[in-house]
Structure formats: structure tokens, C-alpha cells
Length: 347
Image (cartoon, rainbow, N blue to C red; front, side, top):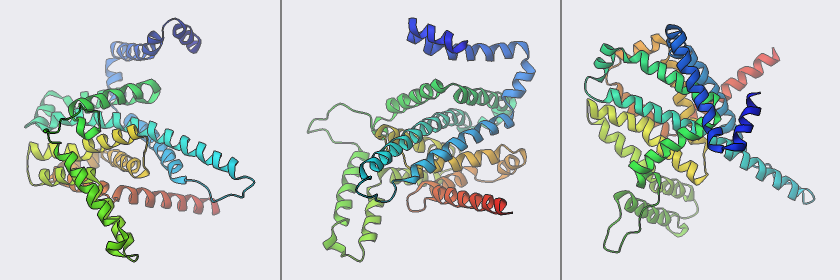
């Protein structure tokens, strides 16, 4: 009945049909707060609800990552080459589409974490939040936000569009947004010049006459490292924040853990080139978030000294191309789970 009503509304006005599900959701949340405020606060702010919704997103992200890693099949026979190649192209397009949609969800979640973390970056933010009781309010708001993203597919597109537009407006050079043409007298930004220099060094390292055939693998590896301007930016921000304390260190940790990976995900979505390495980082980050939802683990983490510095080091190890710790952890955990399932089936 609701689908038929929505179709009739869409026939008259597409804008009203697009806004109607969000209006119904907001009315339901407001009604639940009005009728049963205590029960609604406990339900929306419950860590069990947050954990359940994160697990659902993890399942979808894992399926998209496995589909993206599958790749094309072996070379077929000549009689069936066209059909199988067409099937491989369809599977590749489906894998890229699913991975892109999952990255949009994680960009929306990263934007929420950045907005929430900005409050705790300021001096005495933790003490103010504890005094005013903002922890429960923020947990409740996060629960409502996760429910909104999970049960309204159009909400994911809206949240991603808002995050991407904000990133383009604030940092156009990092996101890759189009900028007005420069005259010959105007110099490019530092990041543009770094990309140009790294591209020249990468082409120089890739020349076979420079290293020979035996060290082409090393040359390709060095070329990837040198040409990856995003990794250098991540390393520079992390190194500068690691040498500081207080709000600057907390702001650097927030940028390294959520903001810069979110910007990289936005660029991957715009280029239509999602990678399993990028998705695996968000999977590992969500697993760490699930661990911190446990009150005991959260208490132990709150007692940990230099939390911002530990977060910076962990995020650098998970993301940098030299380590790729997130992808290694993800692949190792997936293989162990598959081996455990196989042993259970044999038993």
C-alpha cells in the first residue's frame, strides 16, 4: 500500500516522492520521542543497536570487497570467448557499482565521525561533554543516523552528496574538484607541484635502461610509492600531529583516521575506481569501533595514555601503501574464518 501511494505521489511530483520517506522517518522518530521518551533514548542510544547496524554494513562491505577481488576468469576457448568476456565485463561493472555504493555509506559514516570528533578536539571537550551529559545525546543521535542510512537507500545518496559537496567547498585541491584556470604567472599549489614532481620521478624509475631487468620489480614499487601523493600527505599530516600534544594532536588524529581516508574514498568514487584496499580499511575501522562499543574495552582505551598518538600510528600502519595493514588484517581474518567454517562442516 505504501509503495503504491509513493508511486502515485511520484507520478505527480518527483521531489515530493523523494522527500516523503525522509519526512515519514522524521515523523516516526519525533513521535517515538514524544510518546515514550525514555524508551526511545535507551533504544536509539543502545550500543547493541549500533553494533547490529555496523555488522550489517560490514557484511555488505565484505561481499562488495570479495566481488571486487574476484577478477576475470581464465582465458576461454575461441568459440565461447565473446560470451565469457561479456560476462566478465558485466561482473566487473556490478562489482564496481556495489563497491562504489558501499564507499558512499562509509564516507557518510566518516563525515558523522568527523563532526562528532570536532567537539572533543577543543580544549576541555571531554569534561564539558561529561558535565552536560552529551555522550548519551551523541550516542542517541548516532543511532538515529545509522537507522536512517540503513533503512532509507536514498539517505545514503543524500548523506554522501552533502559530505562530498562540503569537502569540495573546503578542500577542492584534495578532492579533485574543478578549479578556475590559472594564468601563466600564477603558480600551482604545493600538492599539484608535488604530483608533477612525483610523476616525473616515477617515469624515470620505470625506465628499464636505468635499473635493468632484474630490479624492475623494485623500480615499479618505488614508482608507486613516489607517485602516491595521497600517501605522502597522510604521512606528513600524521608526522606533524604526532610531534604535538593536546588539541593539535587530537585534530591530527581525527584527520588521519577519518578525514583523509574519506577524501580518498570520495576521489575513488568520482574516478569510478574503488579498490579492495580502501574498502578493507573501513572494514577494519568498523571492527575496531565494534570492539570499543564494549564498555570494558572502552574503559581500557580511556585509560590509555597518548591515545591520539596511538591512533595516528595505527592509522598510518593500516593505510600506507608500504604496510597495507588493513588489507593484510582483512585477508588474514577472512582466511581464518573460512578455515574455521570448513572445519565445522567436516566435523
